Length: 118
Length: 334
Image (tube, rainbow over all chains, first blue to last red; front, side, top):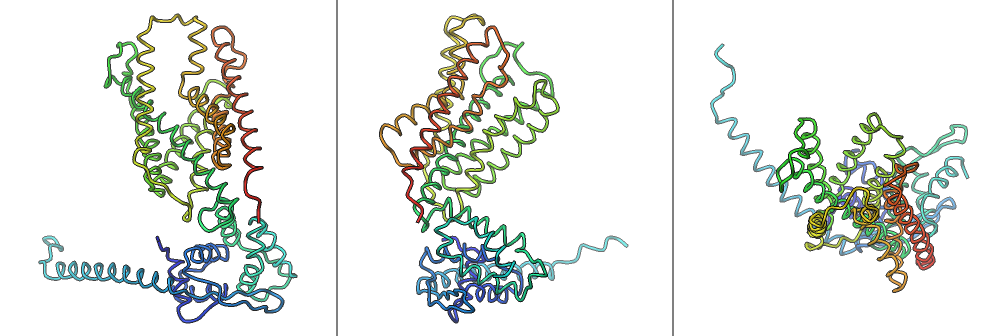
């Protein structure tokens, strides 16, 4: 499965406890340091996909101020999918870090060719 | 109920009723939680971003793939098949167009010098036309191979090229602009079907033979044309020749194929999705066969005009019948 950033963040938001729709929106915003602000239509598109793949499921329902609030929890399959994605991202990060370090080593050890003949 | 809630519920009406029955209340709850304390006097509205997100969700719910309502799945399957057929047609046209362009440039076969394109402008246009043909072929082939994102990018690039050509033609076409609209419509329909129906959750089938099919069909078509050209030359005034042109052009053959396939679908009671797909495909084909540029023509073009009108009527009748039958057979909304 191709896991998008909103899917990854929504799954991560459900790791510690079941959350309702707006709770997931808030947690995703916090986890992404404000970079990802899920719109409600997007959130439910993400939840539909995750539920269809069995990665999240309904935990319980509450009625607050006359409005329905559904809480979702991570399934075992969701935890597994998240672990796989984390492993993939960790590998990518490691490769990127190694290449960055190698590049920096080259630049620090190579004699400077800048500066011209001034 | 606050004004903002009323407005958000109105936006949610874009979603299918079955989806709203399941999700509306919690979506409203989540939205109003995010909106905070808003008074009616503030005249607040859902942001365009929220509206767009609901619109995207509505498209996905209506033409959905996995884990959605059977009706949405069937409509999605129909749009996906229509996109495949439409892009396939343009891929065949691309192959044929490339062969003809190469011939005009003197790079394929032997063409008498008077027919060769020698002017720089003309040669540039032929090269551009070859590139556009390659894009059409690649769009279909990548879709057939399951590379949906690449197919979308290529199909959109092809549509942008068609729009640019349309924009140029608007200023240079000697006839009425309405002559150009059918072809633009026919180009846009499969691309729009592709963009709408091949979303992230859509089931994707991969087939290498299918990816190569346009090349085979184009080769067969060109073989027929070459063989036909070796027959004793027909006079331009030959009525039989004009009738044949109406049916033997790529659009004429596609019309015959769609009408035949539609009749088979009706007789054999195939799936509603396949019938609906043919009904959708019939619309741009009708546009291509609309003889708008022949209206008022006389002489040798009259048989062609009659042929195209017959084709349009056949496609219209087929489209209405298939659409009616398939909508009746589609799974009911939950």
